[in-house]
Image (cartoon, rainbow, N blue to C red; front, side, top):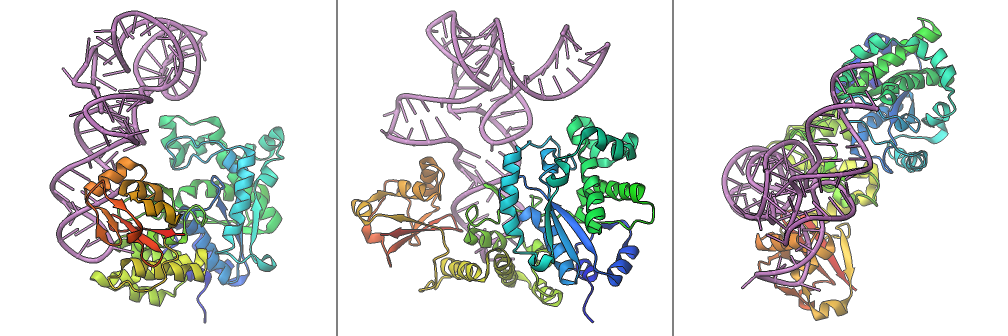
Length: 414
RNA sequence: GGGGAGGUUCCCGAGUGGCCAAAGGGGGCAGACUGUAAAUCUGUUGGCUAUGCCUUCGAAGGUUCGAAUCCUUCUCUCCCCA
């Protein structure tokens, strides 16, 4: 017999805390459960940091349950103080609506929205029209300030100062759960562990409004961290976005390809759909062999987000770039820029070339790169900052640039 | 409303008239070592048409031969009192 959705989550490490695991288990065995997790539309694209709840919902959907992705169009106008040291930047309504729209498409990679098997709603739809007096009277009355202040997330913020608008966030998120419970029969809210307080509040609100028999359960995921302590899904340049325009599939692939050894198994479980047995095998690899697991992780992840074709391209491109043999492999996915043959005829300074491709942010940086021996043209190290690249460097209609050990860039001559 | 403390380069944080493109740390980048890992060590870390020039110490003015440093106004943040 197939594993239950909950079992899948357990064995993959998705579960941090649950308000009532036994109740959730029997509920899920008994019926199709409608569940939800919130997604913040604070940017125009989802990024890797958003993915844990989405993958969790995927597994539960596969087990026959119905996920609702709630875009926080309303709540993101307030800003959740949980786990944040500073107040979040407030966005305008227009920004948030625009973000919500583009996020919706991306969700389709992970959740199946056909035939309403999953839903996406925007909490602005019910939070927007709220009447302050009514809300206070109907919802606010159920909240104890004393209790709210006792929550860890607020305690920390009290040290630094907590704005009233943020203090209200919990009420709104609780109201979300109540609303979804009433309108969609939603019985489970999931979220990162920093959401625990908000989730519990929502459950309490439902019980108070709907009576103590009302079924509402909360489940949190561990906060996924990287072995080096950095934030998941962040690079120096910013978040690892799912939007191919903002973060190319090749770079996306490379991000996953370069995860730390210690993270591979964890990430395979969280961020791929591979069977747990297969992951165990990959995880058991040692030494240099572990690179196979990383490659698999990168491939599977890229396939889910950008599709099989892009994943293949990225894999081929990576092989072409990094393998010693090289060959005529497909390099298409490596980022490239076009350059006119005539310009090349005249010769381009090495620093200009690197700066132009974006491999270096400025010519000063390019100068440093060259001086430190990190610049390569067609795998040949260039150490002279006055070197000029001319048309003789063109091979197969392009020039391959390399900055440092990992960053490749193609200059396509046209 | 009253009083106090502050806003410095990617971040934290020194700097209180010239020696300041600004200590130190973190982070980043590069090199060595490797496995497109981690750790470690070394170098580097505003821009440029480059022994010089330009932009940067919350903003705008001012004093001065010379200002991140002094003065004025503005602005934002935090704390205390009301």
